[in-house]
Length: 470
Ligand SMILES: [Zn+2]
Image 1 (cartoon, rainbow, N blue to C red):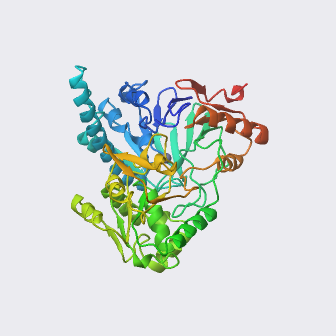
Image 2: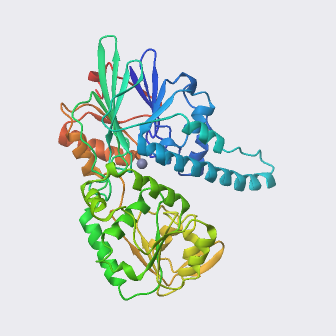
Image 3: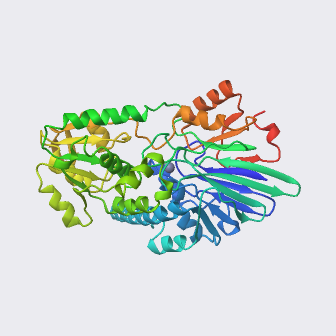
């Protein structure tokens, strides 16, 4: 019995972990590598195992860095089932189709350049047909139900509170007279997030495989974030200019809409026209509205009292390009939520182009902005930015709201781990090396855990865990 991390080992994306018994193999996540171009090229590499030999795949959640290479797995011979939560199955559909589109466009753009340079042309990672073949293999399941995914390998999913349907996986392995339990955290959510429940805590594991994205960071409290938004809302109470909110389509957009619906009266939102200007976010909203049983207490109470979580009388879902363009004609009175979250593309770019130069416009940045992105430039207070080669003077007011991360912070991870009995050994994945080191040190010094970073391609013998880290 062994566990090997082939992705998200000493990095943040490309989640991919293989568990093997003598005769069976189950893969946990099969995510896209995202980030620098050089790293993204590794997505084209063949898998370091034979996909045809896998019995099954288990998916922790729908984010593309956890599911984005599934179509390639099938193309390369995988014939089994992909087990995941019911809501994840719904979201994976949206995200994989979008991923195929993005990839096709990216390859087209790059190939135009490569052709001119006489370089060999690239082929897309997969197309819509590959995505359909992948969706056929999804085997949706519920939390807290045990499912046998291969002889001697059973899994049970628990709510991870990260996005709708996100799961941590309890894996029970039985071979000869030996039984081992491995718990894979998936991505742990940020406790207190709107709509979602807080992550579950488990007690028993022989080995813990744990994410560490924010292993070296502490977030602000949710209550403080709401206060911060409250302040922005009152600052905007006398304004009539447009308000733009760049947001990721899945998770963030729904969280923002629900928060607006909750504080509709207090924030005097009635006088605005609110637009969700993203076909992908609109599809994700349908999934969020469908899975009412997954809501936290507050959202469930809101739903019982007011009906669908995201509905406001002045909210328009703008589906078509024409509908989106029509918003551009509005000089005042619009709140526009659109992708992409870091202003690197998507419909938000059009709205920024039409509004950044207006002194009465406002942009609310409610998520992490990577270096080099337009969103980051706005947060950094740049006075001019370039959009499609055109220089735009920034006269709009830029507001930033912190604390909206979908990931647990260091304290969240510490608390999650502390719920296990007998301090099981812990392998850290899905984080920068620096963040992992800080978290590993704290786990060891405060909780006495044997913690280390998983190394890419290096296996951990599940029958020799007493030697782990020694
Ligand atoms: Zn995630």
